[in-house]
Image 1: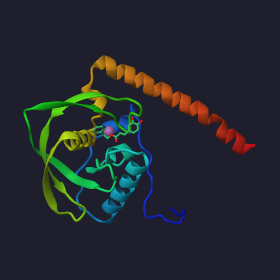
Image 2: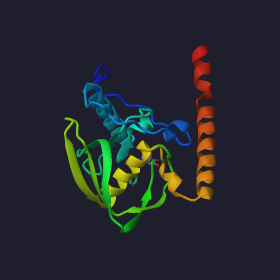
Image 3: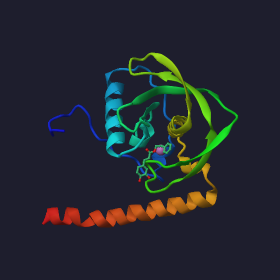
Image 4: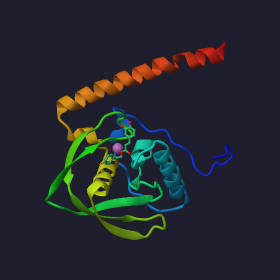
Length: 187
Ligand code: QAP
Ligand code: CO
């Protein structure tokens, strides 16, 4: 993409245990140009990561917006604005989840196997969808983010504290790795 193309921007993704990941997103009042730009930026951020789902919370925007693309071709973007869970199956299913906000960490989470979700699309129209398999997992994972919940919070307290420690260590190592950059520029 040429550098002058400002149509989309890659956004910074918050990393666990950033406290901003625990904020609760507000409903979108109006699906306008600002929201469409946010969705475009979130989609680009997700595709470049690469990931299969991203919630606005993860890019420090605390409004109820989710993007998902579970297709192999990476051209089946799904957008959910103000999503509401209308029903969930009693049958549960385990899936090994990951998260762009918790890089390198994967673990099984048990969730309802089938869900029905209703939401607004980019035109501000209401739609509903029945999802199962990976799509159901992904929508529930992203809807959790909008409530301020990260998937590791489904794991045991012991696992959570290990993951937190590992993330903080990674963060420190990253800071170390980048510490020379400013110095060399300043010379
Ligand atoms: C949520 O997650 C999800 O650790 C979306 O190093 C994940 O896109 C729903 C990713 C699994 C259902 C099943 C994670 C990329 C991407 C990493 C993602 C990583 C690089 C995660
Ligand atoms: Co996530």
